Length: 143
Image (cartoon, rainbow, N blue to C red; front, side):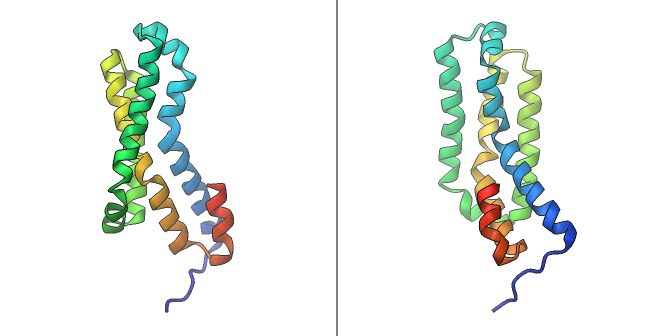
C-alpha cells in the first residue's frame, strides 16, 4: 500500500486552481455559444433552431467521446490529458472567436466538445493522486 500524498503549500493552492480552470475551460465554448446566441444569429444569419441544434451537436460529441475516454486518460495519464484539454479548449475558443463563416462556428463547436469528455476523468484522477484524502471530497465538489 502506498502512502497518501502529502501536499505542499503551493500545491494546496495551485492544484485546486488548475482543476477549476480545467473544468471551466472545457465548458466555456458552449457557454459562450449560449451567451452570444443573439449576436451569432444576427452576424451569421443562423436560424434560432439551428443554433440550438449546434449546442446539441456539441454535447453529442461529449457523449460519444465519454464512452471511450476513460481508458485513454488511463493510458496517457491524467496530467497529459489535462494539458491536452487546455490545448484543445484554447484552439476551440480561438476558432470560435475568429469564425468568419457559420461552418467555422460548427467546426469550433464540434472541437469544443472534445475537451469536455476527459475533463471529469482527468481532474478526478489528479485529485485521487495529488490531494490528501481529507481534502478530496471538498475539492471534487468545488471543481
